View 1 (cartoon, rainbow, N blue to C red):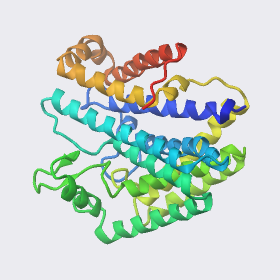
View 2: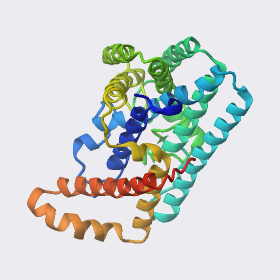
View 3: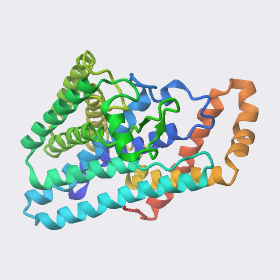
View 4: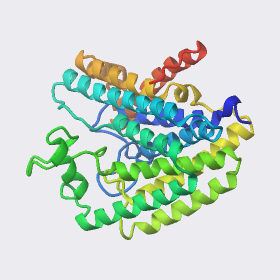
Length: 356
């Protein structure tokens, strides 16, 4: 059953499992030996890791639909809700910029980057919150289709090759050297969380808002139907736009949206309806804090010179002769997630919830 005040335990669990997956794929022990399911596709394609970030943005949309839309429907004044959401979005973006700054200061080979994961989350949250305040579900559905159509045409017009596509060109023009990666041969830049590809990321968040609307009325069947439809449409859309996380192509939006609908339906059925106690809730209640805190921890370990020796002595030195180099690399990631699970579990038991 749903928690009080409209909170669904399934959403917290799914958000938490997604954050745990983010930590796992972001923190291998050895970047030269990463098991393929824990790597992003180099360009076109979609690995299990490529499902993680869109799932989080999907859950952002679900959460907005559950938290903000009912307040507006109950007659709450729109301006205070809008201002509170705007302040939160700015804090999320600011935290992302701060993490990038710390990484630049702490890691000798790092360069300063302006876009980032938290920056995109903040922008998508702001867009979803504004749409929740000022539009109806049908309007948001139309906007979803329009975003994919317009962005899809732009991709076709500019091509989808690395470095020369319109998204990369815009990132290079706006951010210059402050992007994720720069082609040394041409000086062109690209950022997987860049400006133009934020448009289809908002579309992913809109799918989550639609899912949240159905969740509120208990229409799980529509979640399943939407999952099947999105997966089928995403697969077919590859004929025009290959799956591509870097460009967040329309096929990628639909494909990952289909898996997100399916996972939400499954977790909702198990947790809210059957009462299963699945892991993930503690991560879900301190999601941004866990993501940002784990990032800071990694940067401090690298800056202090402890990361390499700790990995070699605790994992690689004895695991590699027995299992090869990929097992210790993955084991480090699992251990990292476990440490942060203990942290958020301790926080949850003491009622400590850090809201950005």
